[in-house]
Length: 257
Length: 210
Image (cartoon, rainbow over the protein chains, first blue to last red):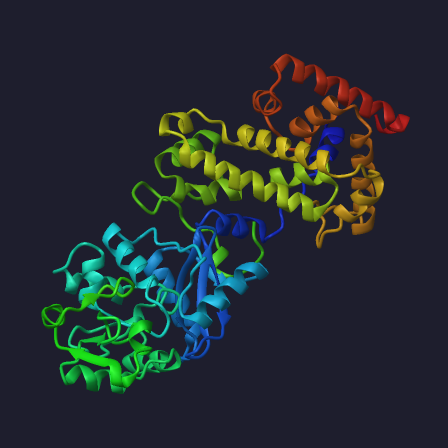
């Protein structure tokens, strides 16, 4: 065989497009992309890869992109870049999740979270818009009724605020409490969802932890949608469940006080 | 190699979690070992090592850059998922390049089955549209492209098995062992196909170029 002949064949090699490797890594979850989208508290970043949504962060702060990217790399050890060709369906699902304040129907990449943290976050995901639950409630739901501090830590480490609504978890003394993006953002979020944070805290300060209906004899957490429908003349406040039980009230099956 | 300066796509040293970082071209054995040791850390190196080859095969088969990109991506994604399910011993035995080529050729066949047949010449011209010629020769770019097109036509005119064998061995530089594994044929068969394919190619050349 003459060498130039074979050399000609070897020149027929073509390099892969520069986006091929990054897209493969994205699809298998070894690299992430992020979008900049609107939310009830302003513009936010949402990161994702082939395994699901991986993080969210505020875009309304100084140096937002740099901080988000650096924070992401630091926390997850994966490369991240702005989304190049985001799929419209995924974008739509994320936008809906942000508007509603929780990403139902979204896959989440929680590979670095332990089983306890995943349970906590899954529980937070179940809290309906417009309602809040105390840390103790979450602790009970995950089967560790005394692990309130651990619940607090797990929620503080929520990788995707807004899409997993850790903002709907409040202190057991009724105060709204802290938030990864700042307490004012938490209060503002709850306000847009129809809760009155100040009224809520005031009621809690007066010892109102539970609200019953004297027509149904069911007792709820105050922000439960059933409780909010009780007309004022039928509202019966309770300090604790023992008091409610003595008065013949049974706990609501939806908010499980 | 990627041309972007985006830090996210700059090749990282692999094997973050234990073991020395791998950089530079890796042998097939090194790749297999690295993948068996830590799939997530080594997979990027595999992608960067084999992406040109897989894309090139898919491009020649589909005649369409978009389809070729999809096929090459799908092959690598399938490979990752398969590797994630293999025990380390099985990964260590792999010849990654031959294995990936086989996956890609299968996907190309699936793709062909689902598309209508296309004339060969037109897509090739579009498919060879690329920003810079691969070979910087003394000839101007258009002459280089014309020559490449002519070789692609000659290659495409070969009977299927000869074309596949010549492509793997002499365009993509696989060893006979790798080509045999990729094509799921005995090595001697592949050698015969390569020899016959080259003979046919040479017969199509003008006298003075043979």
